[in-house]
Structures are given as structure tokens and as C-alpha cells.
Image 1 (cartoon, one colour):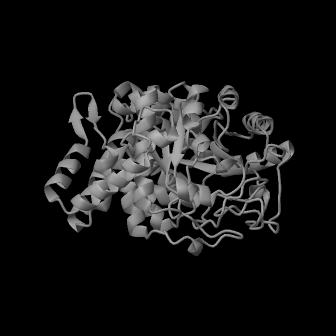
Image 2 (cartoon, rainbow, N blue to C red):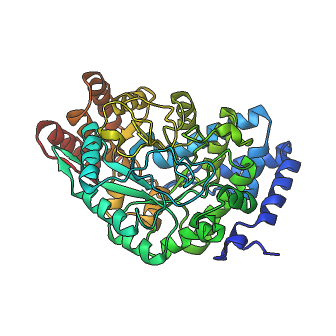
Image 3 (cartoon, rainbow, N blue to C red):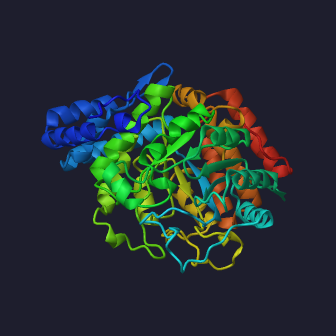
Amino acid sequence: MAIYNPKSLKAEEFINDQEILETLKYAEKNKNNVELIDTILEKARPVQTKTGAKCQGLTHREASVLLACEIPEKIEQMYKIAEEIKLAFYGNRIVLFAPLYLSNYCVNGCLYCPYHLKNKHIGRKKLTQEEVRQEVIALQDMGHKRLAIEAGEDPVHNPIEYILECIQTIYGVNHKNGAIRRVNVNIAATTVENYRKLKEAGIGTYILFQETYHKKSYLELHPTGPKHDYDYHTEAMDRAMEGGIDDVGLGVLFGLEMYKYEFAGLIMHAEHLEAVHGVGPHTISVPRVKHADDIDPTAFDNSISDEIFTKIAACIRLAVPYTGMIVSTRESEEVRQKLLQVGVSQVSGASRTSVGGYTEEDRPHDTEQFDVSDQRTLDEVVRWLMESGHIPSFCTACYREGRTGDRFMSLCKSGQILNCCHPNALMTLTEYLEDYASEQTKEIGYQMIEKELQRIPNDKVRCIAKQNIEDIKNSNRRDFRF
């Protein structure tokens, strides 16, 4: 029997089934243990020091106790502390991005994804480089600066060479004042050599969802194709880091397996990356199973309510305080609003999950990976964020200044957000307002910028940010950054 070891490079040892089951028993036993819960909440709470806020985070066992807790006032405390942590390390900024689907050709048999090989009535499509270029122009015309590229796993149609060519094309498109400044990559688990190639291509974060950490369920849900190999998939982040990619993004597809099991596995994976590589995940995503062509989410009997979903997000924020948290347009405006209050720091906007969808006037459905719940325009999402007290940020400065991996985490932990990320967010928001926003959004935006500039503690940084914002408004100069 495998023994739990977070420093091991073997999947069955760092995501250890016995350890998860024992964790769930411990959490169930202590879910009403008020004294223990209070101790865990106190440990999670950010502490102010001379250099800024500090957080200890929580172990997978501690976090699992909070997730199991059913005491209403303690759950409210979790939400409050989650919001405190998010504001302490990310401020009131919310980073915006969009997915770009390159190809839906796939050789895997995943039971929850419409791209599975046996789905013969979905239209198969792969973008040419000119089509990639047109998609990027459409995204730039909305105001996007950050993309997450997606493709099915197919060594014939979507080899690594195709992905690399697409990245080169994306970075090469400069249209009016538009430019994609960061390309994150969400493609199948691959080799150290291929991860090295992705790093050399200048990618931002490598994202790979585990889907489920429960090995038996994983094998059943992935009956055919290379993704069937649980160990190879689960160990992918270690290969990515060996290949030089120090920003990696985790996630599970909630609703495939029992959520408490998935949650424990997810936090254990974060602990493993910290133990082995000295830096945890750059991001954690929280997608839920949604309706899609040939896929009915009611076929999976582990679906979770909005209330439990919100609690999961809050507990992730308490457990892994310095990690960016992502919620996509899979979720409705109402759910996204809730999650913004408990620690989410990145959202997608105006997403289309079909191959070639951005160049179509009407949202195409024939090649969609899943239904999009939040179908607002980017301008509407930007305005909504500001009306909710959040700064929409299109910033990509850290990645382009080499502040990735442990260098980003040290910046986050040192409390320099207000002197660095905050002004960068305001400057990129100014770019958006000048180049893409409606008059209503522009008016709200400039009121927010004026107010938020006063929150920059360093006088010199504030003066430079003010001058840069004036230069953006009064000239064609763009891309200022700290």
C-alpha cells in the first residue's frame, strides 16, 4: 500500500487515497468541534506585520474540517476571513481574461466532455493561422490582453508544433492599440521536453485540470485515450516545473466525484508543489460540470449546490492564501458575484467556448465545449465589476517583468500589491476605457481611478501612475508598468 508523502514524485503517494479517506473521517468527526474550528479560523486569519499582512494557510486536514462544518455563524466567519485574505494580498483587483479554442479534435474518451472521440455529431474544427489571427483581432477589439488557449488532445491534428505556431501567431498580432500580452496554455499533459518548448515560446501559466483525484473514478471517466493514464496526468505539473514553467494552474471539475474528496486532493496537490518546488500553484480554478453537446450533467450524481460551491471557494482561499483563484463564464452572474466576495481574483469575460467563435456575430453552439451561463459583453462585465467595487485589471506586468513562480509569491507575500499591482491595474483599466469602453463604463471607470489613485501609499509611485494615466489619455502611448 502506498504511503502518503507530499515530497514524493509518485502520484499515489502525494495524492494518497488512504490519507484522503482518513482526512474525510477526521473532518466528519470534528465538523461541530467549535473549539477546533475556532483555532483553525484563527490560524487562517491574515496577521498585520510591519511589512504587510502574513498568512499561514491551512493543511488539507484543517481545511477539510472547515468544509465539513455546518454551523452557520462559523461559515459566515469563513467567508469574512476569505474576503480579508483576498483583499490583503490581491486588493480589490479582478484580473480579466478570455479562453481561445484552437481545435476540438480529440482522441480521448472523456465521458463528461463533448469533444470525446465517440461524439460523431459535433462539428470538428481546427483553426488555421489566419483564423487564429482573426480570432485574436476580435478579442483585441473587445479589449482583452490575456488569453488562455485550449485544444483537445490529438497528436495528429494538434501536435505541440501546432500549439507553438499558434502562440507565435497570437503574440505577433498588433491591431490598432491591441496586443495580447500573456498567453496561458491549457492543453493535455505532455513531456518535459514539450513543457520546455512552451516555456521558450513565452507562455504565462500552464493550466491542467485534474478533473478528479479519485483514481477509480478517474479511470472510469477516462476509459480510452492517453488521458486514461492517471499517474501521467497527475504528475504533469512536476514535469512542467522541471521544464522551467514555474507558474502552473490546478483545478478539478466539481460534480464528477464527491466534492469533499476532490477538495482534499486539490489542497494536497498544492502542498505537494510547495514541498517539492518551493512554490505552490499560481492559480486554482473551480469549474463545475455543465450541460454541453452530448453531455448531460444530471448523468453525474455528484453535482453541488451554489451554497456548497461558495463554501469550497472560501475554503480554498483560506487554505492557499497566496494563490490566484479563477471562476469562468460557466457560472452565472449571481454565482460569480458570490464567489468574488470569498476570494476569487480572476474571471473570464465575454467567453466563447467554440472553435472560431469570436469572429461570428452570433454565438455559435455547434462546436461549444460547454454552455456559457454568463453571456454578457466584456464592457458589461467591466462595468459590473466596478459597480461592485472591484478594479477590472488587464495587467500582465509580473509575467513580462520576470516576476513568476517564487518571485511573484514573494511580491504577493511582501504586501507590495498597492505599490505595484494596484497602479498597474489602474493603468491597464485606463487603456481599456480609452480604447474600448462605452461612455457609461468610461464615466464610472474614471471616477474609480481617481479614487483608487489615492490608495497608493508610496508618493513617488502615485505620481508616476498619475502621469502615465494622463499620457494614456492624451496620447497613443500604451503599456506602462511597474
